Image (cartoon, rainbow, N blue to C red; front, side, top):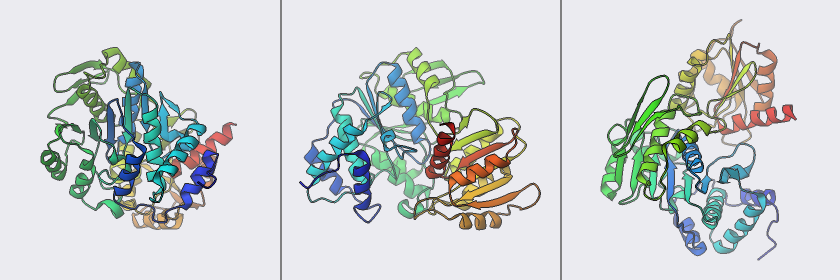
Length: 429
């Protein structure tokens, strides 16, 4: 073997230069390398896919299992500030050295098989979680489901949180096509949970065809609640007088219900008490999901980047109390339904600060401004659109203009939120 990198950053730089096609569909290459590595799990594996709500559902599962005293591994993506955020063991990011060692193992095992950055790092993280002697593993699926690298792992439980139109380039432009892709993580005779209240027929048909044990929201599990507390009902298990999850926002009870349904399906292998569920939901922490930062003006970080998520963000604004003006720091990938996002939220934004993002497939600030003008966003004494070269600059401008009764909403893509997180971090140091 030639000299392999000795630091995580050098490894990531190397992986980023390889394999020109960013997403090369098909799982044969990944499956072959997985077999060579001999990745397998002794413990239950929960695989979570869906358009929105994946991260929240994973975070709730992790938090509840940790409260119950289990050793838990989580793979989630993308990351905001450090690659290490993608793999967590017992709630802590995995250290650089562990990645360096496991990357070398994948590199040796793959021999002549080419892997994308995403495939390579997915195999590495699946391997390090298999090495860690865990009680439970939670794997978040990226793009789609059926052809995602995570799908070479068989989950004991698979959850599809929501089916909405997101990556039109890859997955098709209808909920039926996307539903079929998402349902690709279901397995014969294994628990398959769908928390989308209106699942596409394609997902139902696929689950039936492969003989998965399908749990549907409203049929096999549901919730009800008042302002103070809520209750979960599964097939055989009830969880009453639960506190609201610490994650704020409109869809969190759907996500929490899916998590509790998954834990019900695994209750023989991973028993969990009522108090541990309560504590777990109270302790969940997930950056960038309707995250309201302390201080004034209010700053909200939200990775909403499709119309469904933007509608939820808009609804969440209404529950925040009065703010004189709302500034938006907004940047987006070009393959998103940007017009749909703007349509859902434009009524709540007074001043738009649109930004370029450091990726070739990002929309430019100029393109975003054009779309805002086409959507009828005004430029007058009370409304404005300004363009910036980076989220950091857009955020600095919004901060300089916003009064303490105003709010700044940062949304549109992981990179938009990550840029502002970096800016805030350097302010505070």
